[in-house]
Amino acid sequence: MKAKLLTRINALIATLVSLLGFTSCGNFFVKYGAPVEYGTPFARWDVNGKVSDEENNPIEHAQVIVRSPKPGQIRDTLYSDEEGLYRGSYPGVFPYSKDSIDIVVRDTAGVYASDSVRVAVEYDKSEVADGDSWNAGTAYIQQDFQLKKVND
Image 1 (cartoon, helix red, strand yellow):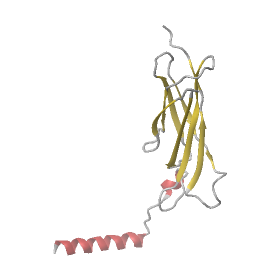
Image 2 (cartoon, rainbow, N blue to C red; image 1 turned 90 degrees about the vertical axis):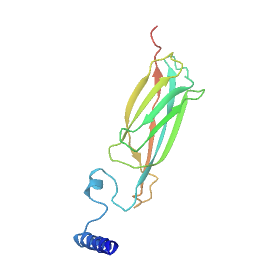
Image 3 (cartoon, one colour; image 1 turned 180 degrees about the vertical axis):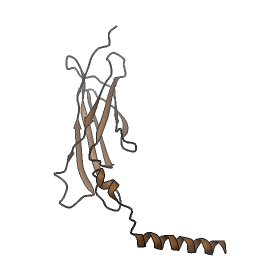
Image 4 (tube, one colour; image 1 turned 30 degrees about the vertical axis):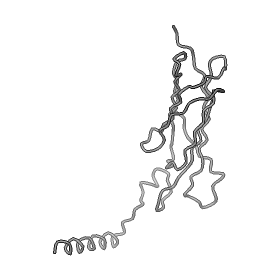
């Protein structure tokens, strides 16, 4: 008896929702620059750069923290190689019209002071096929750092 009542109530609610025209997409997505479609649009972020000292010598094993200020996007820790280079690629990021990324660099040896920057993200949509609003392009973020020695 209780199951039949719940089934009828669910059917009534589904009918009312469809008659009133509610959808899963709305002005929220349009307002923030994301395509209005069923499913989730995506973009790819490629983050790279070089960590060096004031004399342009590479700093190896520098910790590079990459994070988006928006929840649910990118949170990653990279390390620079022997040439001071760091790289990260993040596919499937939900694209917003005003994206940014925070990059924090720390010297794991403690010889150099930390540095950080917030970078505005712009998407390269040249590789996106016409009408393909599922792919919001690729954001290429190139950020180099020159760390200063810590005063003793």
